[in-house]
Length: 105
Image 1: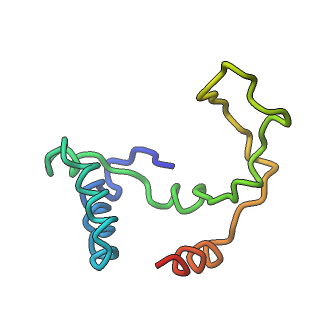
Image 2 (image 1 turned 90 degrees about the vertical axis):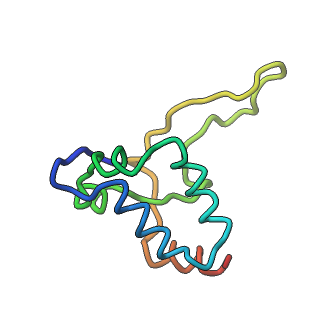
């Protein structure tokens, strides 16, 4: 949920924040390093986004609350992709999501 904003938070700042938060989680740190390995700091510093927009529009949903087809995928068909309209789906409150993530640490 990113929207460009010349004066916003850079992706480099975001990466550094996540690295500090995940300092004790080697798997997350390796995931981040793998994600950014093909970019240099200057590229990530020049990409900026509107944090307020993200805060207002980013939600986490339980998989069971995402609309989907009622029937199984037919034989011979694989990796089907489709878009779901989440406007009528219930999202998790941030505190519930954070507690859920903490339970797995």
